[in-house]
Length: 397
Image 1 (tube, one colour):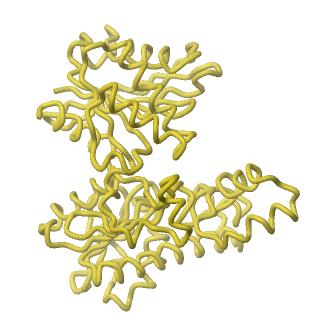
Image 2 (tube, helix red, strand yellow):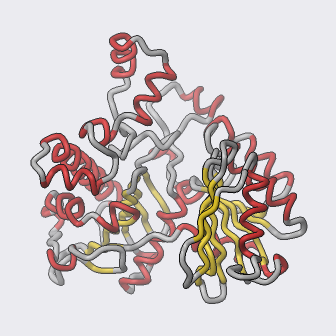
């Protein structure tokens, strides 16, 4: 079965067409600047990328352009849209309503809409993409895969905040966590890679990208994760502050004459390693700056690595031990410097790093030494494949 995977943002849309039988990517690409002017990137497997700038006033036009590209006579990956057996959609927030992926029905979409105030920037865009696909591909089964679903196994002690309980009762204010599709895929894949029994395992996954989160996974189920009600909590990230003293918000608001929206903009878009370094949120730029003697770039990398190590340590406590640690996503897979700095703090666990192996990037690889008491690995994530797998499982059920 060919599965079209759609990841819809407010002004962008990523897509992949995956042959679920062989799990190979037949085509992939990106629609950008939807509602502004439009840019389409399309790449059939084995061919060079194609770019064009057609008008994309809405997501419906963007998805139509994607479908047209997939069946293009010269570079299309399929001959006819009937070859698309199902569509899998990424949905950011499922609240407490969804603990797993779900077939898309009118009732299901109504439940997703009720979660919109928990992710006002993301869920409405996800729904727009779903409705556009429904209009353009009537009768094709569709599945929603939630960023939050994997973390719904967290116990109450992990997800409750130290706030009046009525805020949870009335507004469902609690920790939800994100990147769940990645955390689920990586934890399962690492167990297979290491020959572990996932049902008798203690795994920590460090999903380190521009957005970054860590999860504690016991026996294949998430018991804690670093992101919270929103993706702002937890690690220092590319442009997000991560954990801070909440009183800082009032302090900065008064000093800078900002309202709550202004403060939130600072915390989400001007903070993190970009804010510390004054240079960039991209670790390639930070490493270049550090190597050229820029002290703020060096400080940003140290702060990021230290926060990752602290969270790993706290999750070792939550799991009462750890069998394996996975580094994944853009930084986790491709930044040996960060992995080395994090592992310097883990000597108490008996972690020793194979420096030569740690120099590798983007491949399934054990980077700890054979005598390390805890296995440390690079495990590339593949959220699109995970979405495709869930989609097939539900469609064929």
